[in-house]
Structures are given as C-alpha cells and as structure tokens.
Length: 253
Image (cartoon, helix red, strand yellow):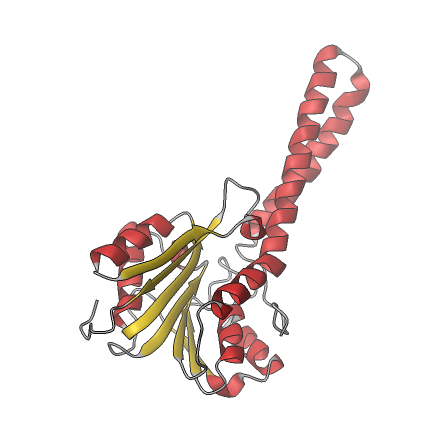
C-alpha cells in the first residue's frame, strides 16, 4: 500500500508556498541586478540577496514536499503504529480533500470513517466536499466514508461515538486559544472509553497537550515529526500528539 492514496489533495495554506517562491524569484533577480555594479557595497548586497534567494527556494521546496508527500508518509506510519483492528469507527476533523480520511478507510475494511470540514479554500486549495468525494471514489473506499459539513468546536455527534478521532493540520486554523481548546474537548467528548485522539499539527500542540491533561486523559505520545513535515524549515516543524480516554471513563470530556 503506497503512502499517498490515489487522487488530488491540493496544497495546504496555498498562499504560503507561493509567497516563498515569489520571494526566491525577487531576491534572485535583485542579486543579479546588483552584481554587475562592481562596488564593494553592491557585491556584498548581491551576495546577501543571493543567500536570501537560496533560503527562500529551499523553504519553498520543503513546503511543497511536505504538502505533496511528507504528510502522507508521516500519517501512513502513524496510522500503522496505532495497531487498528479494522473495525473502528473513526472521525477525521478538518478532513479537507480527505487524505487522512481515505488513509484510515483503506485500513478499516470493516469500519467506517466520518470526515467533517467547513471546506475553506484558504486552508487548502480547491477544498470542497466534492473534491474529497472524488478521492474516496478514486480509492474505492466511498462506501466506508461519510463526509459532512460542520464545525469542530461544536461537533454534531453524541458522546462516546467514535473509537478514533484524528486531526491533520486543522485545529491550528481555529482562531482563538479558547476555541481551539473547545475543539480538543469536543474530540475527547465523542471518543469512546479506550478510544484515542491523534493530532498532527504545527505551533499549537503544547496547547492541546495541556487541554488533554486537564481533562484527565492519558497522553501516550508527543514528539516532533522530523524534516519530512518541516514547513519551510526547522523553525516551523510539525508535532504529533496521541492521547487516549481511560477505558473506564464513560463520561463526556
């Protein structure tokens, strides 16, 4: 089974790589303009601009690799490491084009995956339920997937509905810390006792860890995910959080 499923999955936060790519072009062009002047200051400025052009180009490459390949490699390894039995009921928050939704469904031949999203194109290029549905069809998992429109801070599901809840680069798009905390608590609420929450995200993972611990859940794992999910460089990494609801906990989080 290849890490990347069949289909088209867009570009995460598409304005970011295009900005970095444009900067690489502009800095490179300016470096070429100043180099022939020959004065000491112009040569120094040309070298400086050339370095900025190279850094911007590397950032663009890392971003595009992460969005087109790296996130699929990482999620494939994370999901395989969960030891799923194939019968789980799963929920994918902010599912977008359905990358994780489809990857889960391929590993749950007797289970079901629900993907929920607000379908905002600023978060992912070409984001729509129709685009996600085309990807479910391209991988022959359409019968095991339900796609719904909804807000992750107020999930339309009963308590203890799912065995697994995932969120890939989604919760950080919620604007305020309080609202992000509600999203995490909602994910915990709809988990069944013994169920797990798996979040792969940037920047805000320590926030989620604090919410999970305050809710009395067990943090199984939290760690950086390495260069394959660097968004422009090591200063903008992606981290993993895996938490579980105690098997004896039948209350809402």
